[in-house]
Image (cartoon, rainbow, N blue to C red; front, side):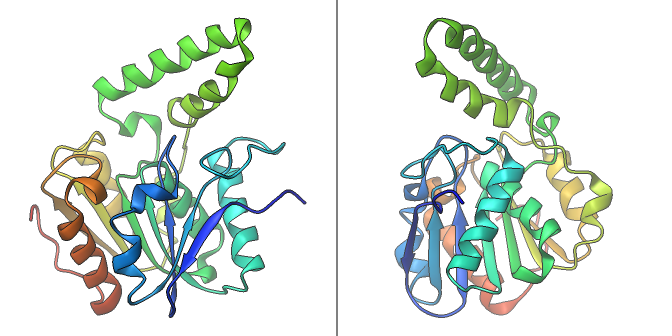
Length: 235
């Protein structure tokens, strides 16, 4: 068995797992950890090949990252947890919830997408440019191989069927920015397919947790502590 992912574990109460985005680590949530840990046991994870977690020999895929998360929960004897995932972390959280629904109490998806085409065209071109460039460069310099894998996570993944979302009974908060790099109609499609989803668009871009931490934190805590928030087109 490979080494478990690196994680920061602070606070007490119900477990709240924080999953960062592509090329980041648990410090993405530096403005959330201290706030959330006042009410919850916060477990902020570095996914495989990110931060302080080694790449290892397993496949470098979002699906594998979801399995790594299950191994971590088992090791920590956490039977159920709230999951907050940003960007690729949101995709991992959704895949995990679909695979292990009994392990998830509540789900928060911030800037998640079901397919690469959920990204706006401008970002999609940048992702593919970087993916192709890293692929060519890796033939001449092995140091580029990891960058190619990182780019592949966005260029080629995920592929989550909408019909699968309809099976998920977990209360879910779907978040996105009003100027997000994820298409608005794609975010709405995710929310409309989930039976118990609340959809909120917060003023800002993709990185809401860092751009507007006070608003982001208040929104997340309201969902976790009070249940569903009435849908609003913009806050």
